Image (cartoon, rainbow, N blue to C red; front, top):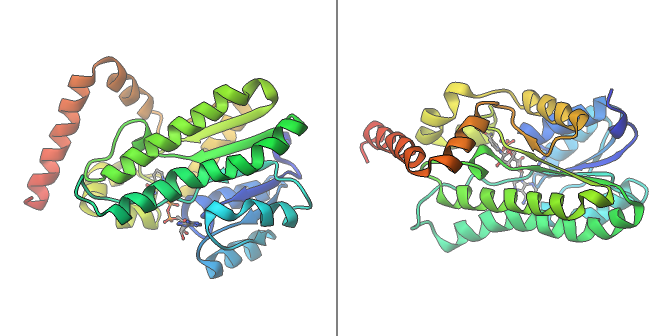
Length: 256
Ligand SMILES: NC(=O)c1ccc[n+]([C@@H]2O[C@H](COP(=O)([O-])OP(=O)(O)OC[C@H]3O[C@@H](n4cnc5c(N)ncnc54)[C@H](O)[C@@H]3O)[C@@H](O)[C@H]2O)c1
């Protein structure tokens, strides 16, 4: 059991399935009181029933007030997990870009806006962002996803460096493939890049809890991502060349 989360009031957005449901299950198993949010009310309620949590369905951008009431006045841990897979190129429709910004970035900003004043007053709070390895690297065939996940990572980093001396902890989870509906929907690009090393949602929850115990910001359920991230920073052209090789492999496989 992790002492920091026992009896904590926890919110997990997008927790009707996939990684969010695994996080909600793990927090509940660790003795936390969990609010299960999802756009899909039936799925949120099913997970809440299963773990003895409280369902607060709706858009992840507007969950804090109701969740706080449901938890008796305070949110101790907020998991900004809801996300949209948004594939496409520079030619993706404006609406696709707008939804990706809204869910993958602005929902995190809006939640923090509501949470931080209370956390600063109490001198504690934990913000967990489910980013993606695409936020550190990039994902072929998915410009809106890659760009907004970089935004989510930047925001988590900014929160961490701004408030760490005031008792606020931040974790950024950056997995590659995880066996969820989103991986299924990622199609041939996901099959090429993500599926071969895909892990289970509960492995992501395990990695987060290890990171909480070790008080680490960056959570890498696929440890090899650290090497790719380093290669990107130190040898950008070599790294881009390697990524372009993947792009060409994908084009050949799909006859683009
Ligand atoms: N599956 C992967 O390979 C993978 C890899 C890296 C990062 N991620 C990230 O993990 C997070 C969870 O994804 P997942 O793989 O579990 O996908 P998923 O599709 O199984 O679950 C996402 C859930 O979020 C909900 N949702 C979508 N928009 C919402 C909104 N505006 N408000 C509330 N709920 C909303 C959906 O209804 C769904 O239940 C996402 O942020 C995703 O980008 C996934």
